[in-house]
Length: 375
Image 1 (cartoon, rainbow, N blue to C red):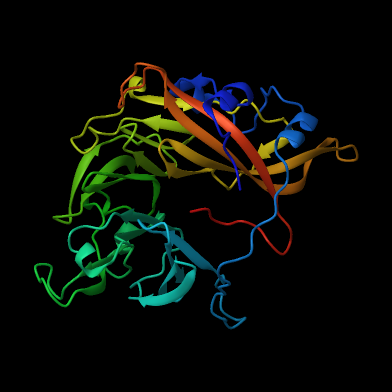
Image 2 (image 1 turned 180 degrees about the horizontal axis):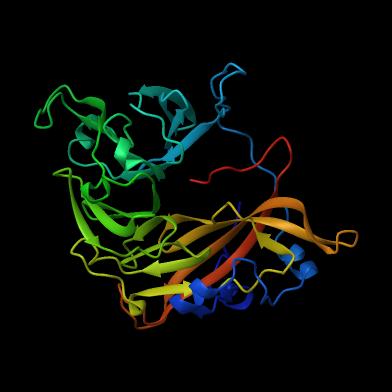
């Protein structure tokens, strides 16, 4: 499925360079879009409807007794390998699904120690301990997006699926382990907290966590399994942000808009300044397409500065009887985006950084089928 123009010349003619917003304007922007440049008919024509391809795997959650107050679901987690994905269910069971060389298979992984209501996964690329055994999955760190730090001793909320020996220093007999990890000690007294965003910066995983008792950004150092505090501030990203080595920057979503930032100094406690980030405005969507209130957009990195940005939208229509707009359709809008520098600019800077919108496609939801996650 093609979301990008084939040549730079074609992108220059048919693509769109998105305008930038200052962080302050992005925060002040109302979630409902009101300043739009496209009418509905033009937007419909520019974003044809698509149907999903044939499924690679049909996976159902475990059957539960109707008397149990629990949702039936399966979570999908990305890995460092393009051909592998990890699946987890409400019973903490973990599976790894692999599609390689036109052959699909599933193998088992250790179970998690505790249920994660809103699991967030951070995939860490494989190291020298993985590659000799032919494993390219890398390790997977899973944290609950809704934390109860004061119950951490009885309810594991941060865990890791890691490939190692019986002891961390062992060379032979390596296999998968599930390790319970500590939460940041600075929030241990909090009753409730929410993980606002997370990024992998070198050998550390940085989390922005906020709650009634305050907010802060904390860095978990993978090698030592120790925490450090970056500061009493939040990173700009909602959810996950990915590092793009070709550009030397991290990319994700901020205030429902595409965002780039230089987070290279965050582990050392450097707070992100406005001149080290860019936010691009999506002013190319019609007013009738409004963001869903409980679904954040997702930015999926394809490498080389290319992304698929997925917006979860409601198609609105005016109801004369109620004298207000109402949702008549739900859909996901897939848009190919490309980040590039103007001629002569070097990576790792914001000067000359542009976000180019390529092509969009719509996947319409139905009562039987909808998209819950994009990896």
